[in-house]
Image (cartoon, rainbow, N blue to C red; front, side):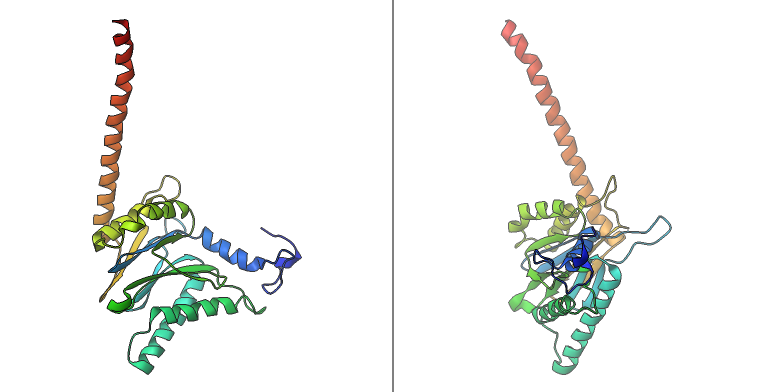
Length: 268
């Protein structure tokens, strides 16, 4: 992706008015494994695909706990994500120490966006090559919140979104069903999350309890579903897919038989 002399430093503008190193950082987010977020009136859910370097290694951690009411899912450089997560935890602890209460997620996210943006104006630092989906619960007044950060310093709040490699499939699913999320239960939200992640798996791979993590944030609830806890939901989604395939095969057989009967009717 090397362009020309205008991408040698983050503070150099190209003639088209672009900061190429910032765009390169955003490209690293697109190449990271997919991460999906969605929210209802009571819950915020994040699902993430985990990658392993090879068959002998464990899967990389994609979901991180920031506070009792805030968690993040990442796409991009894991090392950059750990650095940002450490900073976010310190901000939460400092706020709790001074004010004896949990930090409001919108304040934390605005400060995080400013931290991202400062790296685009200073030549001694490079942009963070990671995108974050942040799930938070800000009490019964504001309820669940879902944010997305960008290496450019942009901050977005969503009803549902997806980032990372092959995330367009997940976004298509979420755009189709997001209007039904508001009144969904926790179980229904988790199932929607898993269904949207299915299209993000590369090649002939499939979702399983080893390469998938789901974060649930709600009022007094913070839990990460992995392993056997998640397998129950994965099995239910797999059973739905198998039932749909069997129903589709039966329908094709009936349609195929119909044209064979039409010539006989015409002959009589």
